[in-house]
Image 1 (tube, rainbow, N blue to C red):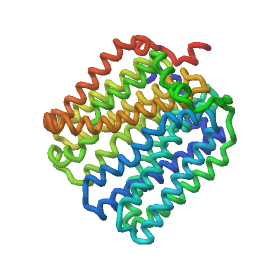
Image 2 (cartoon, helix red, strand yellow):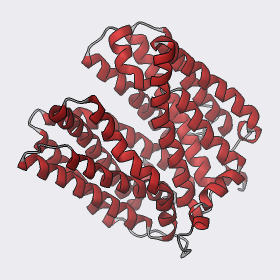
Image 3 (cartoon, rainbow, N blue to C red):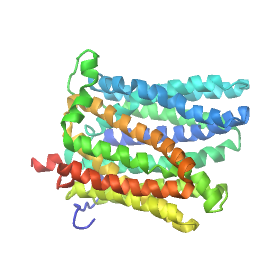
Image 4 (cartoon, helix red, strand yellow):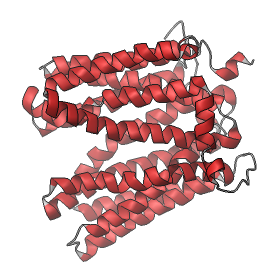
Length: 414
């Protein structure tokens, strides 16, 4: 990145901004708690029913309310205090953790109460997502925003890496222990978010009509750069969702056990975390469009290597590189969307972004399973990598303004 980035003497200097530090700590603790809870919920539900379909319902119970509420949540993020929305969403997640703890203490014998709690959790996640994305840009000076994005992303991925591991370790003492610790972390997150001082936000009192709720979609459609960046992620992840096939790859191709599978699952997050820390010290400032397309291309190439190898270390390295490439794309897209979007509709545009990301992840896993059943495991992974590379090339032609973009919009105006 030496010729395309602006070196920073202190990538952690952004932490001197009190609001950002409180926000970052709260978000990291909340993410860590949720990841720990997910491990306990999965083990507990399967122990009760021994039904694989119920494991699928865990994801559906969270994603369905998220998909239904996300556009309304985006409007709320533009109309109401974003700091308060995030604190309330974290508070709702805390209530979910306490409910799961209560179910465990009394001796849960049915799974439907867990699914009911997860519906509430998915609803809270819907309102938290747009407010979280829209608020970050207001917490730091413009010149520090790229570092804030990088550190926010790295802390998220560190929590995603550590959360399942800690959840598994604490589960040795029983699910009650996991829910107690995760609830304590969520309580701390709520307190920290309440300590964040209210940041300046445009006053928007438009009623929640279909016209105002869909304003984010209209804005994205009218901005080729934003549309290109968001849709690139949608289709790249849609075709490149080979990580959903890791259990089968681990068992049938790499011939490794659960420990090896755990390392494979950790590798993309580790690659993303390392890359995001590097970006905090060396933010991308030139040829940003090429960097974004290049990150997606690296992700596709890594997927091809993953599908072609039968060696564990090569697969582990490929997944690490895939995580790093994806992080570059996510970093550029987040900055681009936030810089291009007026603050008055930033919540609604962030909601559209969340829909695209959520749909790509969920549909990507479905697509990978479908093609694996049709083509076979290895061919499905190779197809996904080739399709991702093809999407990269097609998008560079469909959205030339994206591929030619040199600087972020706010830098062009200086």
